[in-house]
Image 1: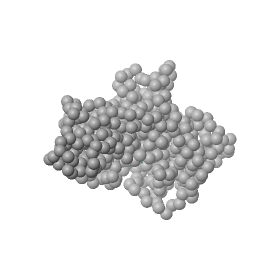
Image 2: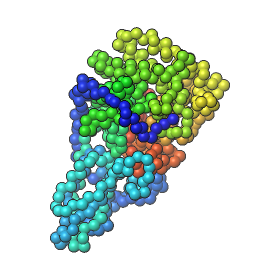
Image 3: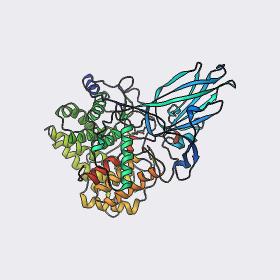
Image 4: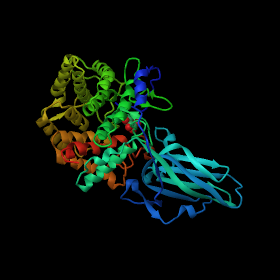
Length: 528
Ligand code: RAM
């Protein structure tokens, strides 16, 4: 069960002014930085890099060049940037007897420039492709593009001038802004150079996704998703700690629930806060987890007071789907996400997420000094059902699917993370998972790989966890990543959940988690 587009436009949402005012009050301070290109490059075939494409430096001084019809150049900013691009353009030669017709393309990775936008036929809007066609009637001008782009490379192509004159481009720059406070510098980094690089790229990914909210990806979808927020917040506590930003995001979700009180899977903030009419069973439940994790880091009575009722509502609504025996029944109109893959049964992972978040919610209830008993009772039922019905003692793995004949990695991982069994048994389950279900196949998101890695750490399989982190995130680095990607299937490099890699985001929040994993499981005891 998964989703493409959900259209629930009959659902009415409440806007709670008090909560939304607080979300506004926690709006983060942005830290602007101007960045300039470091070199000119050209797209080159390079089989060792993503999709077989890389960039090679060319010796060209753009500012001294004059561009005529069909000529182009690629500028490399040397790192991922999220911001507004501008440059000066003037004409040289005879008077400008026709407009300048210019194409600009912005790319996070070289491979994006190897694809042509006309070839795109994926299911997400092609409007996400970062490409502009611009006519300029009068030069000189300072071209200031109104949209924000996420990129490392900019390609400028003169589609036409006229035989009488040419265009000169000077002073290109991008005005970037992030709400990352820059406090990650005080955090120790791993000694192992491979892990140090994995950490660094994760940190950069996180920083680029910290804007007015925790965005999922500055190229696409440029919005706040609850599932992504959970992981970003955890990574931020370990590095770029910005408590107000987490609070802002929590208040935005809490301030815009459906009339039944349900939280949507994502929200928009422009031109004013608005919830998307998309609901994911697991994402709504994660509200309790984000709140729990936040309060553990930053105890805050007001936040607990304001947001506990919203977490409670999500839990109460979800618990209506649990029967007397403690079995969760998922509904078609509230799919459980778990991962983009549609090739595995998600029911067991869904039940594990219910248990995982219910435990966090019970903690919150304790903090609130309210009665935990009814929830503890529900938890017992859910866990008993998981141990008795879903766990297969012969296989030493959890079953999934209608028939209970499927054994998939997501079920094991989420049951381990939910702590349905103790440490010894968790270790046994993950050891079996390694033997029976590794290498992981058909999973293409760092989101799911994060949970696999964390389950290995939780089960005490540190070496295996580090091995997986190096094999997966390390592989992205080997393929040229300087920020981590939204989707990556090591067996199928051009995989995109949306049907074409040109639409994929190559700086995506949910993939930044080595920052959290390394900090929590490998560095936490080391001095700064
Ligand atoms: C995509 C985004 C986002 C994710 C959802 C489920 O649209 O990449 O990060 O949370 O899917």
